[in-house]
Length: 156
Image 1 (cartoon, rainbow, N blue to C red):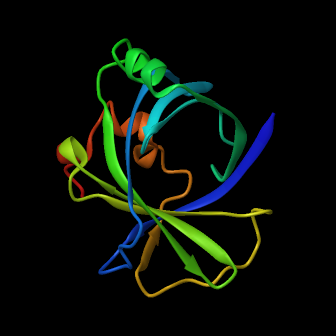
Image 2 (spheres, helix red, strand yellow):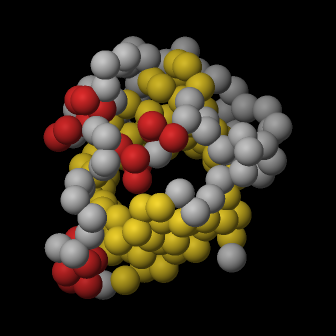
């Protein structure tokens, strides 16, 4: 099983919006100990299993496999309520690539950037549009955004 190490930030201001790809995803299971996600990314389908995060929230186990898009469409029909709809942009900054998600629907107005690292303490260049770090804040997990969408937050 692979290990995902990433840090998550809010995005403030303008960022490069090039080569975006639409993502629609749902969850077959969204308990804190594990999530099972179904995703359609462009014209491909994926099934992903993620374990619980470590104490900082930056690292967790992850397993993913590509599945036929039609299978992903069928699985989305039986997911828990609350679909995530977003466009993902990949922006290279220095030696790293940030994945920036611009959300729609019930999460409209939320823009999050993630950077994958080889180590939790790895240094990386921080662009001017990178805002507050929210790594480990469960409110910003996609599996939580489907249950308690951004539009419902009082302290936005």
